[in-house]
Length: 330
Image (cartoon, rainbow, N blue to C red):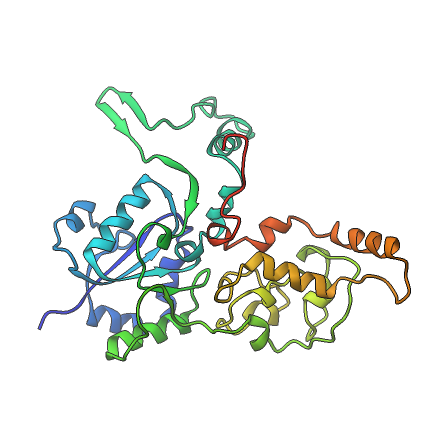
């Protein structure tokens, strides 16, 4: 009996999701034993034409990590969707755009200028920005077209399942793969999230919440938080109230704020939910304080919140109600 086939592809991402698959330890041997790997460019010399030559639905399970940043990413998204029975958005970049999605706050030209023109370098060729088509002695050279807007995988092709995280935690990868290998009944496909909770991260975080009111926010390097106490109530912008649980609150337990990589709760906008949480902890002054003075106190506290858009939408910009910022170039 032929083994089921497995594929994994790396689009616009850092590559951490590829490495995270190795974190399942010895179970990777079970995956290797159970699946026939037919496309995984990160670990073996597969070519795109290999995939093109497979029959449709030939790949039983494809883990697609990375957002859609350029024409090559989009081409492979359509190709792997056609060739795969089950397509999984693996990790935050594929699920919601993640850090590459913050490019939606600016334009391609501004990005190229920052990288090639405005940088400090002794490379005299740095002002030569990438061109889609270039003529070289060997002929015509083409590179992928960079898109103005970074999109999540499900904004380009239908996705069967989502495994969130930056990267997904080993225990959730293991649980999902074990379910697949054992033939266990998975939830109905259609963008269903696997291996994560349906409640906010705060629900599984053991830190004590005293409902304190704060008068300023701190960046992580500015404060050493008191162990055992809620980080948000200490002035660190912990995204726990606006983020789906499932990781075990690993970061807050070691004094690092949740950055929000598991994405928003179902039906919610992560930034809007976090803004509501922020409003609940900002001090408006003592009872009886004049309204003008209260407004000034709130404004002073909020002025210490650095980069709110980049903080609230660090991982979910592509899927947010904002989507992308309106720029001069459109």
